[in-house]
Image 1: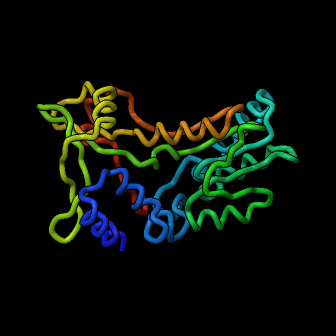
Image 2: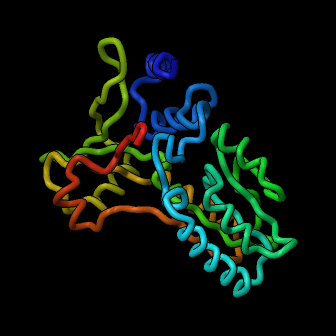
Image 3: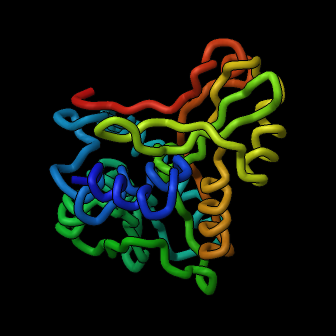
Length: 246
C-alpha cells in the first residue's frame, strides 16, 4: 500500500512536504491514483471535466487552435493531461493532414485509450518543440500540480508537512521553507490568522518547463478558481479537494 511506502520514507527522512505526498498519491508508479484503475475523468469515474459534459467545449477550443496555428505558423498541437481524449477528439476533426498531434498523459488507463487514436503520439512528457513551435492546450491540468500547504498564525506562517502518528499519516506543523514563506507572504497577505493557503511553487516550475519546450506558438490552459476576495473570505480552509464517484 502507498501508506506503507510513505511511512517508511518518513521514518527515514522525517516529515515530508505536502507536495511530495501529493506527487506520490497521484503519480506513484504502482499505487498512485492515476497509475491504476480505469480512466478517471469520465461520467462513470471520479470526476467529470467540461469536454465530457458537452462537445461544445472541444469545438470552441478547436476554433482557437486552428486560428492560432495559422497565426503562428506552427505545425504541431499538444494536449497536456489528455485523459479520456474527449477534448482531443474534436480537435482532431478540424486539423489538416500533416499536423503533428501529441497527447501528454501519465495515467496508465488513459494512455492505453489514447493509443487507439490514429495519428496521435502518446507521450509521458511534452517533447522539445522549440524548432517548429506548437499550439498547446490543457484542461484542468494545473490543479493536479502538487502544492505545499501553509497555515497563517499570529506569528506568521507555518508549513503543514505530512508525518506519522498512531497507525497512519497526519499533518505536522513546522517552520516553512524560505521559498514557501516568500510565496505565502506575496499571495496570502490578506488572509486572517488560522487560514490555510496552498503554495504553488511547483506550478510555476511546471509552466516554465512548458514555455521552454514550446518556444514559438500559443498556450491555452483552462481551469477554475475564485478571485482574491472569495479566497480571503470564504475559502479559509484552502481550496484543496478530493473527489470520488463525483
